[in-house]
Image (cartoon, rainbow, N blue to C red; front, side, top):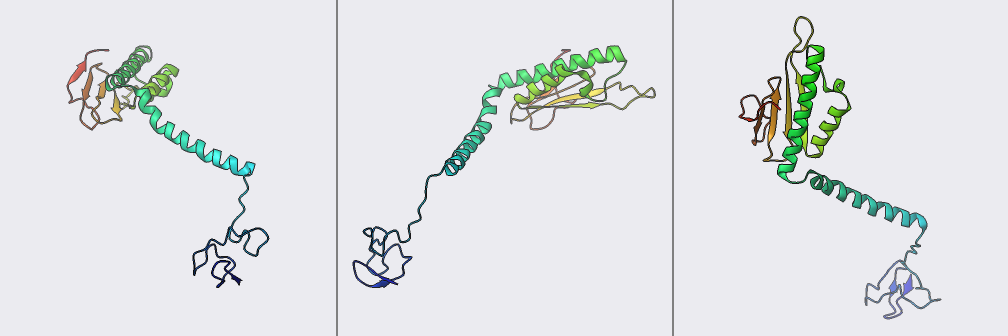
Length: 187
């Protein structure tokens, strides 16, 4: 127990302020029994600087990660054009494959890097591409497929196409289907 230098009441040595008079006992003159009582000595170390810098960079990266995709996709017409263009290029690759192999592939993986690049480009515009092959016939060849591009943003066009080559679309919050109106004939 110590006595407060102001009111001379007995106080706990861990007190920061006197509970009787409110005097600040942490700023007592050097050499007194109250010097540095309750004050933690926080040294600025390289480890502390590295941790604070890491926290700052993490917050900055998270902010950029959330904000940047919206800048990449551009305006609504730009995003829809990227989605439609990717759909057309993938559809051309499927038609070429069908002409050489006599059927459609069971997945888009066999169509190469160009198709993968177009799917990634559509994804950067917030479109998800989905290829669904039809059932194989007796010879094991796939004779039909559906290809959709679903927008990640509300109000953007969702696209649908199949082996007919007709692209259909809707602005409703659902995947486009064969019942939707055509938007472009034979890409």
